[in-house]
Amino acid sequence: AQSVTQLGSHVSVSEGALVLLRCNYSSSVPPYLFWYVQYPNQGLQLLLKYTSAATLVKGINGFEAEFKKSETSFHLTKPSAHMSDAAEYFCAVYTGTASKLTFGTGTRLQVTL
Amino acid sequence: DTAVSQTPKYLVTQMGNDKSIKCEQNLGHDTMYWYKQDSKKFLKIMFSYNNKELIINETVPNRFSPKSPDKAHLNLHINSLELGDSAVYFCASSQAYLSTDTQYFGPGTRLTVL
Image 1 (tube, rainbow over the protein chains, first blue to last red):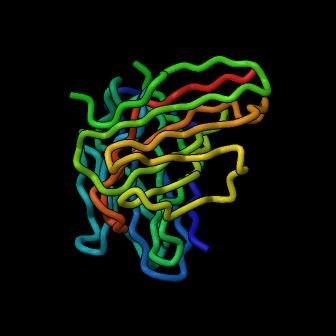
Image 2 (image 1 turned 30 degrees about the vertical axis):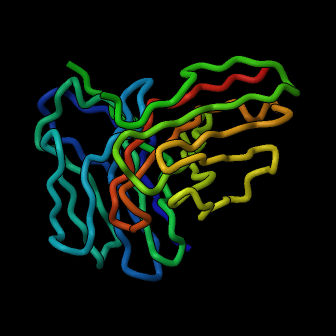
Image 3 (image 1 turned 90 degrees about the vertical axis):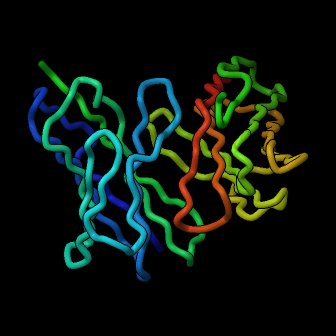
């Protein structure tokens, strides 16, 4: 069965600091991986996705993620945090065998001055 | 124009009542979904429809009945509401029923059952 594990339900960084949100996946077949962001009281919005092309994926708002098969990871990074990045971030995995998106439990990013 | 819209945004009701949530997408997509997000923010798929046909039914109680009158609409009807149904329900859509397609989410409907 496919699944994703997000390490850290809550991450706090200072404005201007590096953002690193961790996601590890489990899948018996090559996965497709996604990061979604949910701002307060809103729906989810796609940040970026890995679809077996380039392993380093660039997304919106300066975020990027690197697919590392050897580590079964797809961590999300941003060089410099901004106050507007404060939100809930979800990693998700899709495989053809399950034919559905399976989400992680989410990581709440807090950005402080 | 809102891509995926849901009504109502908030729904407060008593146990045992029946309620509906409506969803519409103006993106021309073929596939639509219902997700449930619980109080701990855990998001889980409930149903997916492709070209008005049910594709996924994720062990959801049969009190929940989705209906897709056309490709642009996917409504969710809930009978005999229970306390445990309190959650935020999200509708989403994607171009087609393909693994790499981006899913576009609506703003959510917060259901509170008293």
